[in-house]
Image 1 (cartoon, rainbow, N blue to C red):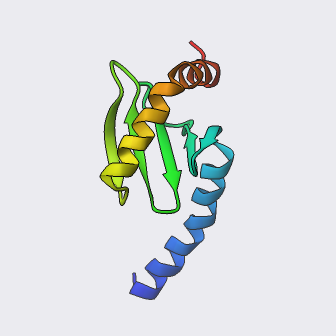
Image 2 (cartoon, rainbow, N blue to C red; image 1 turned 45 degrees about the vertical axis):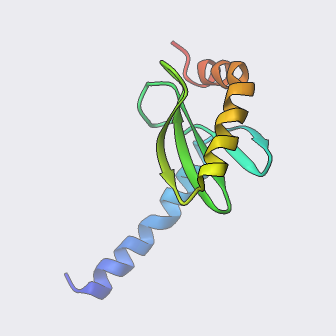
Length: 102
């Protein structure tokens, strides 16, 4: 397969992935410029994704709040996000249980 064929096939997949991410990633809340959300087709361990214009991160919510992944966010932003998660933990847990019953 030529490089141009690979590119055109990859391009055809992108709208589907974008659609999937938009439709199947409910926003729990937005605070201080961050969007806190879940992906519906991911591992069962409770966690939350966080996105802002600068980058994104994933935080485990159990057994304790911990950074799982960080992409382009500063230490200051990570600390701020952790504080938001701590302050809103009950809301995140409730939303998780509603979105992933059982």
